[in-house]
Length: 220
Image 1 (cartoon, rainbow, N blue to C red):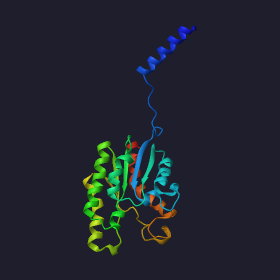
Image 2: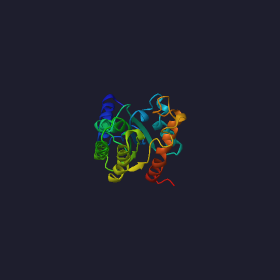
Image 3: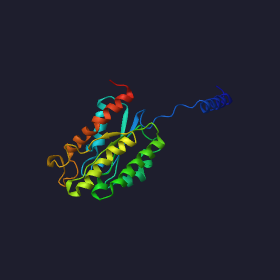
Image 4: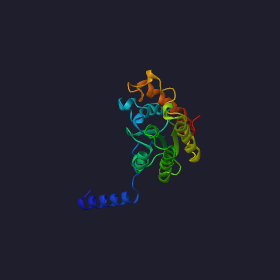
């Protein structure tokens, strides 16, 4: 092929490519995205990140052959107010198909009014769905120890199912079910789950998350 013909060939090819661009590659390799918005429990405080429950959920998802990738958006010490401020950042420009909200424990320990925690959780869900209207949301409930007072602990416990109902989200009844207060499943601080405790936390979420993912993928 002569040089001018070669030049014309490449011009034609470039113009054709501009008119019919190749499909963009999905940043997650074609997989859908699950974002877990949480605090130190989600971040895996005191542990390797691969031992934290979001990474364990990923293993369960992979074993089930489901096309999802889990993003750990846990920040130690975070509150629902912090989650509300950073939800847009956590979701990123691509958003997510599923959001797990595992915040509120630090609110309770700081004595923040349950009504404010409820408002923040609702705001997180509203912001997330403004980006992705069809997003599935799981609210992972927390509970406070009795020494916080009966009135406070009661109102705190009630706010999570209320938010889930009001916002048509799924409820994980208690994130630390079977873990909170169990010495063998927590680190020396008796607050943060150890390796075995994180496995139990992952199981608690998976009970609610698995049917949602399978329903979305129409897996029996």
